[in-house]
Each structure stands twice: as C-alpha cells, then as structure tokens.
Image: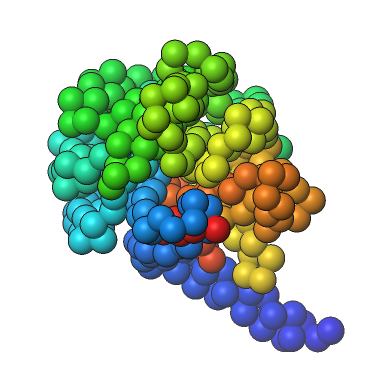
Length: 318
C-alpha cells in the first residue's frame, strides 16, 4: 500500500475516532431516552400496572437538563416508582437530587442504594472495566457521601428501603410484596430469608389478602442475587448498575457489565436464568429488567450506542 494511501487511511481513522468521541461525550451522554416495556405477568383480569424504573442518575450539581427531564417523567403518572441506586456523584448533589425526584417522591415507591450512593467517584484506570469484575485491583473509594441522610429523606417521603429486607405495598388496589438487597458490588448484599413475619405471602391465605405481585429489587445484578430472587419466586427482578455497558458496539452490544452478569442481559427485559437471555419458561425463569441508567461517572462522561434511559414498565396479564 502506497504511503499516501496509508496516510489517508490513518487520517480517516483518526477523524472517525475524534467524531465518535465528540458524539459520545457531547451528544449521546445527554440524549435521554424513555423506554416503554410491556411485561406479561399479572393474574388474568387485572388492569395494567405502571412502574417507573429510575437508576444510576449519578447526578452532580448543575445538571439542569437531567433534573428537568427526570422531573418531567412524572407526567407518565406511574402507580409505583422503583429507584435502583447510584443516585448522585458529588458531595453537594443532595439539593439537585431532591429537586429531580420531588414529584416522584409523592408516589408510592421503593429503593435500594448502590456503591456510588455510599462513596463519591474517584479517578480510576478505565481499562479495569474490561475485566470480569471491575472491583479487582481497584483502590477503595475514599469520598464518603451522606447516604444515611439520603435514605432518611426517601423514607420520610414514604418510599420503602429494601436494603436486605422485605416489605409490602398497597398500590392501585393491589397488594405487592417486595424483597431487596443492599449493593452486591460492595458485597453488602444479604438476601432475607423467606417465610418470616416480614414475608407478605405467609399470611395471604389466612388474612384473605392475597399478594398480587412479588417484586425483587437490587442495584447490581450479580448472579447470586438473581439466583436467590428466582428461588424466592419473584415475578419480576429490577436492577441497574451496568449502564448498559455504557460503550457498546453497534450490531453487537455491550462489552462489559461491571459485574458477573452476561453482556446479553446488560440492559432491557430478559428471562433469568436461561440459556437464552430472552428465555421465559413459566416456572422455569423469572422476568429480569436491567436499566442502562441515566448517568455516568463524572470521570468518564461518555456513552456510545447506549443512550441514557429511564423505563416505564407496564405490567399486564400473562
């Protein structure tokens, strides 16, 4: 190949790289998307139930467009809001976060926290994310965030904290049992045992108040958590953390999930477990929804072929 051809090829690749980085850092990272997903799992004859799934806002002060976009989601009028953590990414982000979530805190809701609710982001080698588990070889986070105050604010608004516990909600005339875990990425998860006084399904027959739906909520969808939820007969498991891979290959998808979940399930609605990510075999698998989330670390503010997102899950009769 002639030198001039090599130069043109190299120049073209360099231009494409620069254009891709500009798109990922200036456009797509702020190109928020609402995903609407239908999940067929309710008992026959029930009306649809709308769940707004918010995850991985990684909010920092001054992100006005994200704040306004999240607030506008209240126009969807969901019956229930589920927040799967990593809400902020700055020590001073509490006012901005509460402003963004203010209309949603008026709705029935439940939440768990993620690693970046406990600790602020620190600069790390981005190549470590190419490993099976990005925790390996990484330095511990050193910027504690006021997560106890955040949880108190959510709790005082009426949202249920599902960190390693069970609870129950009455929503739109339905009785919903819930089970959740603390963040598995920090090994804080302890799956609560079934059959105790906190399990709403135990007294369903005796009390005449049957459970219409059983939801599982976690931040990081590690296999051990999803297996425990499947064994617990969860109807729908809801998670975040993966950012959908954040940088995806068009036509291929995510390269990493930042946990031990396979990349085919990095975002969207799937079955768990199953040889195929779309497998749904009745008692043989559990519905799983993983959100690609709305933000990124401020030290890696890029997305490519993976728009930031929130999801409206509409549950309908199976």
